[in-house]
Amino acid sequence: MQNGLAVVAVLLSFAPAWAEARDSFRALLSVYRCEVVNRLERIYATGDPASDRDRFIAVTVPGHPHGYVQCIFHDNQTGLYCEASSGFYYAKAGETRFYQSPATISALARIGFDTDDSKGNFNSDLTIASKPDFNAAADFILRALHDGYGARGDMRLQFNAPFAPKAPSTCMPVS
Image 1: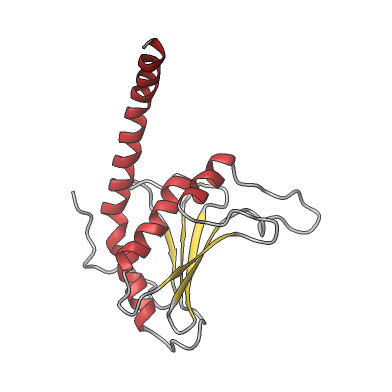
Image 2: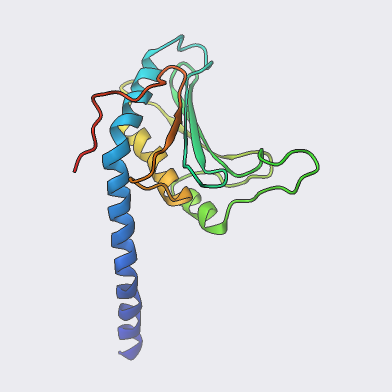
């Protein structure tokens, strides 16, 4: 019985951390979900679906060493290929390679990224249905930024999306 109580005590000690993580992700969603969804919708609707050129969104966490997620629509919009920074491309020839922390790697693996960084960034290829679920895609991107790179709702994330360069005025944070 004592072992059972010890396990319960340990689990309860993690409860505040779980609640805090849930709440901080909810805050990030309230600030950025609309903006990411809107940009994904505009990228999807713009340009030639047979061409992948400029059909991407990249979101960077300020202040994080190499903390970004970038996704591109491909194969006539049937897929969304996403990369999360592994640090593979950061170092110049002859410099020591940057590696993400074990916590970052573990967090990205939990949400579905292939974390073999021996040849490039961590990656995940999402299937896009004929009626795309942009909310799910945005949540995936934001979850990777939150869990992997520490993005929070009070940060000013940076966006690069050639077909959707400006944030829509219709997206206001929800309380």
